[in-house]
Image 1 (tube, rainbow over the protein chains, first blue to last red):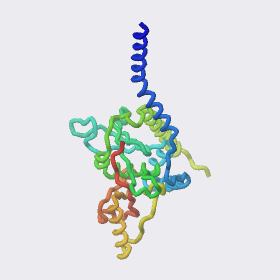
Image 2 (image 1 turned 180 degrees about the vertical axis):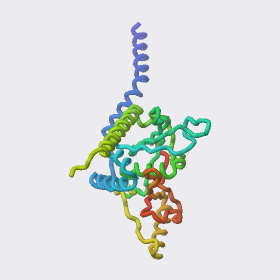
Image 3 (image 1 turned 180 degrees about the horizontal axis):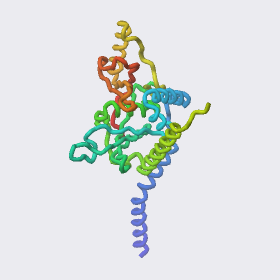
Image 4 (image 1 turned 90 degrees about the vertical axis):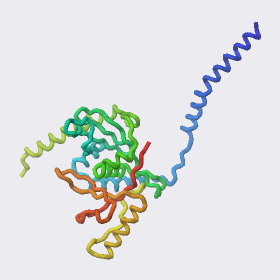
Length: 204
Length: 77
């Protein structure tokens, strides 16, 4: 009897070990990863900040005033899609108007402005493999400008280079919906301020 | 565009001056040879702005005041 109970206990313990060990091992690995020191060669926060300032100046000089204000106020760009074979083509072969949201160092998100339906994510990077300062990563505003230039200059090419995924793979769809709502509010406010400016009389 | 630096002036000159023209052509080719893409920001219709991608120095619009080089796009994860 005792022998049978002991054997049963041993079997149960072994089974528990088999089930629990992968979970425990993963937790240990996660803990080690969190506590690991990540060596960043020559990272200089001041330099990165100055680089971002230069990048913002360059970006501002390339886009129009509305686009700059959008990026400054909201942190992203909207670029209208120009390919005629857009989604939801009608009998004439013309697709529905579509647009992209450009975030720094995140995938480009394609969507339908009329319905705010998200279409896809285009994962694209602009790595400088010469790593002049130990990193291949452009400043945020340079990354946005590179995407803007590539999309407005040769949309078909950049879309072909990118890896396409369903919405939500990297950019939270709730966040995008919120951003589209913010963009709508921002545009309304901008229109109101323009009308106010047009109707006002300059003071003497 | 450079990581950790932002905008870097590579070359500047007057296209009307032959030596400077050659210098600009060489700099342009060197950048494309290094795997960069080149674009010229310009105004489009309706007050919008857009970029024109150029892969040959002769394609650069004569009224362009600058060409911006940036790393070639690659599919991200």
